[in-house]
Structure formats: C-alpha cells, structure tokens
Length: 232
Length: 381
Image (tube, rainbow over all chains, first blue to last red; front, side, top):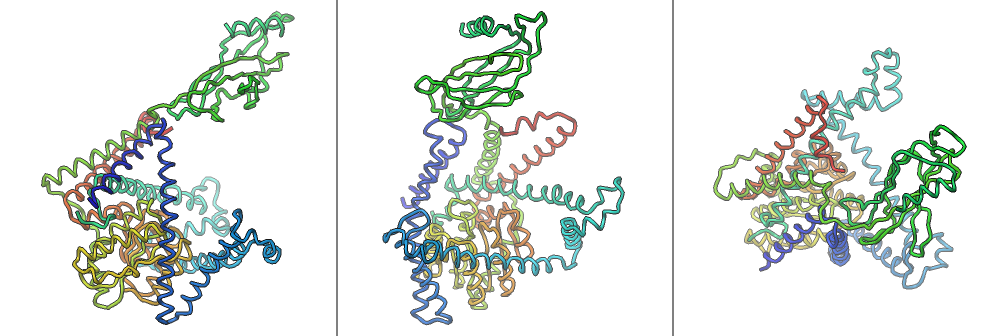
C-alpha cells in the first residue's frame, strides 16, 4: 500500500500530463499550470524542512565545538539576520510585520533585507563565480597536455577557437587573399563551433532526450522505484 | 449580401468600382484552446473610377483591423503593412465567444478605404494536429521501450554495453572504506521536477546500499528542500535494505542553501575539511560544475560525474575519473539494478536511437537531393 498508492498517482499524473501536451481543450490545457502550482506549494512547505536541517546541523557543530565552529555560528547568525530583516521590514515589494522600516530606508537607502542582499550576498556570490576563471585555467591546462591523439586534437581545436575569437587571431590571417577566406582563423573557429561542436552537442542532447523518455517510462510504469526508496 | 452592399456603397459614394479577388475571412485558429482567431484577406488589384476609362492599379498604404466591443463600438486592433496577408488575433478571446472584425484597406487611388466585415466563433480543440509528428515519435520510442521490457520479462537475453563510470562505484566505495573517509554525493542544483535530479537520486539509492554494506560514511549535501526529504527517504530505505538501520544518520543528508554559488562554497568547504575518498556529482549542474569538480580533483578524491547538460560535460571529463554522458546518467539506475525489465528499457532506448539515426541520415540525403518531405513531416509548427 505504501508503494502502490504513490505508483498509481505517478502513473495517472504522468498520463494526464502527456495527454495535455496534445489536447488543448479544457481542462487539459490548465493541468500543467495547476500541477506546477501544486509543486510550488509543496516546495514552500518543504523549505521549512530545509531550514530546520540547516539549523540543526550547524547548531550541533557549534554546540560540540568542532574545529572552526565559529564559521558555523556566523552562518547561523547570517541566516537569522536575513530572516529577521525579511519578516520585520519585508522585501522589495512586500511589507513586513513592522511596516516598511522608513527610518532604516532613510539610513541605508534600501530596505534592510535588500541592502544586505545587494551589498553582501551578491558580492559573495560574484566572488565564488569569479573563481571559475582560475579553475578553467587549471582544468584547461590539464586537458591540453599532449598525451594522446585526442588530446592533440583537443588542444589544436582550442587554440584555433581561442585565437579566432580574438583580434590577434584576425590579424594573423588577415594577409590571406580573399580566395583563401575559409582559412581565416575567425572563419575556422566559426566552422569548428557551428559544425563539429554543434553536431556533438546535439548528439548528446538527442541521446539524453532518449534517456529521459526511457527513464520517464520506467518511472510511469512503476519499474523504476528507487526514488521511492527502492524495494517492492 | 453584406459584401454586395459594400460594393454598391463603394460605387455610389466612393465613385469607383473595384474588381478582382476580394475577401476578408475570420476563422477559428486551428489546434488551440479557443483563444485565437485567424484573419486573412485577398484584395482587388485594380479600381475603375467614374472619371477614368481604364482600370487603375491600386497602391495600398496600410491596412487597419478593427474589432467590435461589447457595446458595438469599433476599436482599432492593429495597423498592418500592406504586404501582410494575415493576422492572428489572440487578445482577450475566450472559447465560444463571437468576434466581429472590420478590415479597412487604404490606397492612394481611393478616397475612402475598402471596407470588409467578418465574424466567427472560436472553439477549443480536442486534438492539436500540429503535434502529430511528436505523437508518432513518442509512440515509436515508447513502443520500442515497452516491447523490450516485455521481451526481457519473458527471459530474452539482452546485451548491455559496459558503463565504466558505474562499474567504478564498487571501487569508490571500497576505497572510501579502506581510507576511512566519507563518500560525497552531490545531486546538483535541480529540484525534484528535473528528471536529471531524479536520475541522480536513483543512483544514490544504489550507492547508499553499497555504502551501508561496506560501512562507509555517506555525505549528501542538497540545495533544494524537496530533494532533502526525498534523499533522506532513499538513503534510509537503502540502509534498511542493507540490514543496517542503526547506521543511518539523517544529519548526514543535509540542506546547505538554494543559492547556486553558496551551495558550491559549502560543498567546497566540505571537500577541503572532510577530504572525501570519493565524490559523485550526479544531476543538474551549471556554472558550478567545474568549481566543484576541480576542488574535488585538488583533494585527490576519486570522482564520478554525470549530467545531461552538454555545456558542463567537458569540465567533468577533464576533472573527473569517470563521466556519465547524457543518457548514461538516465541508464545508471537500470544498469546497476541488473533487473531484466529495467535492462529491457535500455535496449528499447537503443532501438529508439537507431530509429533517430536512420531518420537523420534519411533526412540529410533527402534534403541534399531536394526532397523536403521528411523534414516537413517531422517539423513541429
């Protein structure tokens, strides 16, 4: 019973959603939107679970004074401050329990929640994103080390594409006559991106789409039950 | 009758006579939910005025479409370029609603615009015939998958190629056990409405079972609350199945943050502090893919990744020991379970792939020889 009911619901909902793709008539045309709204409602309740988990795990580490416990405390305090600011003075459009916090707006120029969001959170987020540049460099270095025919090919393609995308690449082959235009580095780079690269990406996407069909069917037919915790 | 009256009106009051094909039609938009109406027109090319012997070629300036409101007033709906021949009205149209339109064609040679009227009622359709190619493809693919599932259930022997990334799971768990270090499983930043996340979680079930069997520690940081509750349930069931419910600790499956880079920062911290022996990145990944995998590479962990995001795959290939590319991620659970019916579905997918390859080759050949039949048949409008 514990498995049969969810499997039955999954099958029914899956069938309705697939049908709604081909039936524009009422009520099928509203079903997807309705289900998405249900998902959002359930997600909103699940957020409480997430927050409880966050508080429990972090406060446990602070209590046990594990190594670097101060950072967990900072995390908890940051979480608490953001939640409090949101509840008391609201976010951009919504009012909080204590109104809009006009005095604080006059001081910070924004609501406290927005101020923290744009002046602390966004900068931290951008810093993490910026790390990507360094990681790309080190990963690319490893990928381009010549070890095999494939890595040679990869390095060659990468060098051509990188040069083709820069002004130096354009000037390097600018002296070539018009009849040899196809040998201009930007044109070769465009060719690599538009044809071999696109073809490979589409092949991956087609196979992934087939995988999704197979996976979805297994779930709809109740063959795949691992997401319910497995078992019979 | 109405059209004749318009001609009489034009001749008497405009002082000219037009001929040639002339019509203004309003039709319910096909294959929709009854919220659009198609308007089309064909206008006369010539006009003969009372003062001229020979017909004069008409040069249209602009077309104006008006719609009658509930009070009977004509409201301007759209002004169109004279080269336009049709327009779809989808503003405030409800199924079963009667809509009246007036079409005004302005030309240099006419003192008054040519005026036509039309009306129609929109209806919601029960079948979107424009999606027939999609339906055919779905029936073909699902048919192939179901056929092989049934064949496998009847005991037919099916060959499934080896997927190294999945074969490595035992090695990863063994390594974690030997080193006494945890296994880190990252289900990506997708929510439960993303099939990649579900595929990742189905692998988590198998991984948790093996981890429980070998007494290895498993850490699962998640970025979505719905994924948290599902992952906890999955791991708990796996520990129960392995006969070690006492080893299950729900705090090992924990929520970090919904934010993409906050999540990455959290996991990077875990990798640096805990030094997991094996990392699994299976699910939906975007810009955070390389930051995660490169940090994991730096810690010396054995890494297995899988996603269907084509742009992130090169990063995983470079930084991870094993990468599940696209469909392999979705095949993982079936592959690991070794259940005949699940393996049958994989074989069905392969048949679907063959069908698509045949269609692609046929389509390319037909396009080269100038026969667009297959492309037209399979194109979704």
